[in-house]
Image 1 (cartoon, rainbow, N blue to C red):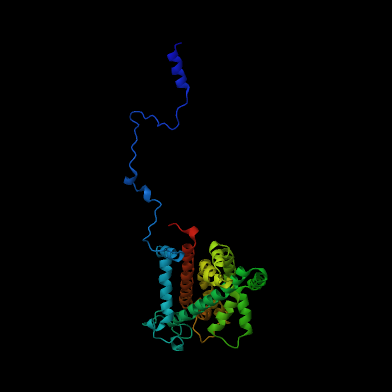
Image 2: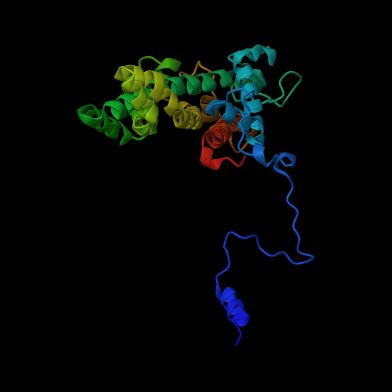
Length: 334
């Protein structure tokens, strides 16, 4: 074997240089465009001219594209308008009754006919909207304030404060809403008003909001923004009301929106049982209770206030579902 053969074999045995460019055969050439001709460098760029956004802005953007929110919002706006301006829809006094028109059929200006006492069913249905919506909104606002404050203090301060407030919450949570309301209203039957119904429903309805507020505050107080605010010298109460509670309101608003329909149904149930609002106050529950005696002969007298009640409750429940989807990042699809 010649020296040339030995040298050739030793060179072939040496490993290839890993840094060397790969061998490209004919027909396998690849073209790589220059970087300045491709938009790849803009993938991670930030548009500094874009307006700042927030969770609430993102939620509103999601709600505007949700058909469920649009339908429920239109219904709620119409219901609130009827409650605020009932005379736009009827000039008839809902408390004016004429026995000569008892159970008469629909007539011009009276599209729903008359009930057993000769009262205009359409007028009573329209004016009953104000009572039911007022009770639902006022109760929701009071429950939101009471439940949020108690839950916020319990979750933020913890310790014995949390223990005491949690045990009080457990006591009220063990009492069903309607059962507790019936017992209290039976004890104070000397006076009847919307505010009495609102206070009784608030007394037994704040527990769910308290639980949600407590959990949200306990989660938010351990986040970095609270630690940074404390390091900058902010007081605990300032942190609670300025930073923690605003960041905990999303889940509380969802629960409150959904519960509003429950309070409307509760008021109607109490009026149906005869222990809610007085008979002189026009309400859907009272009209449903009065119409049950003629259900077989004239079911339409009961039908109209029942449908109004069902549509109102359904609208607020749909609104609550839409708000829940918008404020929950895990449920967003865009």
